Image (tube, rainbow, N blue to C red):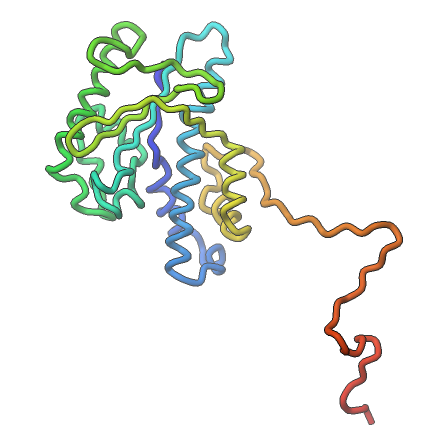
Length: 261
């Protein structure tokens, strides 16, 4: 079995879902810069969860059946490199949902984007065609033999777990040639949420997981809550006193400037 995903699976959904949110949901966003940053975070973390669901989670469940044959995993990266497309395309489109099928079928019309017009151009055509050809060769061998490896293609390792194991074939291309590599990348759902909690404010985290990504098939039934900072603990018998500046009158003995009549 071959399992595949694209690096920026959630890119188009991140934007459209954000635009569908109510004013009440986005009331805390105070600037275009903040909104842009939030959408970029949705693309990054939503794509990690989305892509990981397609490959990593699926592969683990399939291989839990001891009788199942080998699994091969890939991830398409084309569109992430601004030197191949352009900066806007790499940020807001990237290797979007379904773009791997465009390459497999050698039909590049689906890659066009109103967000970054002109990113699909003659200068990157040779690289696109060579990547398409390489993908087609892998699929040809797999359909014939149940194994994507064969003459003229680099070795595609089977999927396996473990640290620093080359388990994923990364499809990419420069403007003129393919740029394939094996990777040890492993997108784990709990690690993605932990990274979000580390890098995002509580407000932004909640807006993404409980609004923008809410109900998506790749989300867990119980979404991790943002961790709360624990209250400082006191030793038995200790009392907590409010701090005050030197010379200030304690609050309990301060008097109003005018006395009531």
